[in-house]
Length: 226
Image: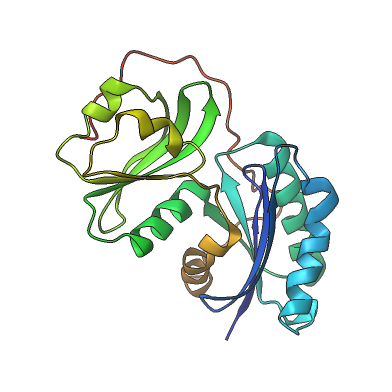
């Protein structure tokens, strides 16, 4: 049995959860337009530990979102995770925020051909990855512009678009697709974190750095998934 603390701060959703193996036992999160991570993160950590009726010394690992995402949010989350891991001599686990969104979507809405997690970048732009129905990553994180041409290119391939950028697909979606607009949550990280824990797939406390969502210069129109 392993208690794993989960920290997700890649967007404006300040989210903390506690998992017993891969099962969530406590969650505390707050999404606001203004970032509250610096003020609320450590309070939320204390809250979930108290809700689970355990002591911080009972933790076996710390898992944190590695992005892509906001520089401010990720910096605060990773700093907190590293501090807790160092103080408790605990392993540090990183979780791809887009992968966690895709896995959540596949669990909630199975039998779609593709899952495209999307994080809002700016205007019509997103950062996204593409997964198939078996959670194989077909396209790693890349920036793109969401427009009618992009969505038309997905025709005939039932897809779940998920994340805080998914709403940008809504104006052009056909009936075969689904768009779920919500931010990454620590509660979505449990399965991936537990699998990494069991495989001893840990990060170096000294050298681990998250993937920050950076500005980019958009290219030419994007085509279909494959």
